[in-house]
Length: 426
Ligand code: AMP
Ligand code: GLY
Image 1: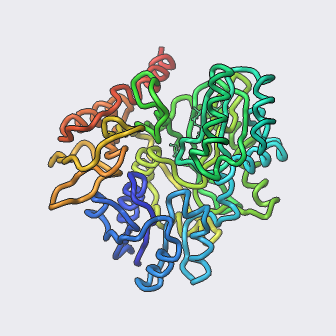
Image 2: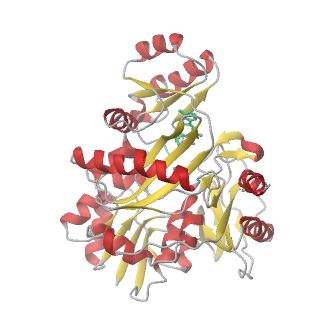
């Protein structure tokens, strides 16, 4: 089979590596891919948002199955267009991808169908939003409605911070039209859990749980980033919480989407917070998470392509989705300065010996035969082991062997999870 994967980050590298395990796969194209993905797939210089380019290529290359990984092309209707030209694909259509594409949509959906989430108000008028803030409890959370590269969420401790955030979104329009509307919501507390699920709109199968590390620096300090590391499974996600999420959140969400005539097929990502009042939805994503995918897929024992095809054909209930009971840790190596300003073009040399860990490449390209950084998050150094402690040790040991002068990484990925595991033991 000829497969095409749209996207070019660490997540797509992890997906491609897993798809390659299927003996039916003859060839994988990555659009656009990156300098590391190039070792595992043929990279084609078509951007992930170029829907026409993607479809033209799929036709020309006689693609048998497509996987669209990033949010932008999903929201823009890549799956709809691929279907129109007869290319089967994994991912939600644009009507369903709105669950991530519009925070106003997802908050209203949760309210209408009683899915637990933070209390909120929606505003499209700056002055009204400003007046509301004067009455709101601090801290509060202000979110741009549309896609904002994961940066559209502001946690305001004080009224001044809240007003600044509102200005940034609605007046300065740093996210463009994504800031035409805002959601202002209650600040929740508790540990966060990411649960990626496979669903064809009828059956929903949760993958192994994971924990992202969103802040740039150790001990959850510094700016929010796209994710500086992940571990799986997440020790906060107990069997009891998993049952509660299935009953009160996961199933109600797919039912709600069906009731709205927006059946979701693909990977539905639940960003959850385990609050003192039980698990609540912080966000939905219409796709695999990054870096969560880098720890979840290495633990998948079943065949990813078979699952994806079953999802697209609406027969997920026919396949057995199994995860190993090992643990995984992914340490992200970013360019110093990320998530604000950073330089590109610095050489990266990966260790030869990849026995104990493997490296997913995100923001790097090939230049004059060398691998150089081309983005903020550059590598995802991942290890799998029988226990989390060993997985963490192995990924850090490998991260130390990477040569990248302008790189930095957090030193505490998995520390919080280890503390929970220790407490549970004692
Ligand atoms: P999001 O992009 O919606 O995942 O938000 C980014 C991060 O902001 C989340 O991972 C949370 O840590 C935090 N966050 C979002 N909404 C809330 C909330 N209502 N209460 C507390 N923290 C939040
Ligand atoms: N790791 C969070 C996300 O993928 O949105």
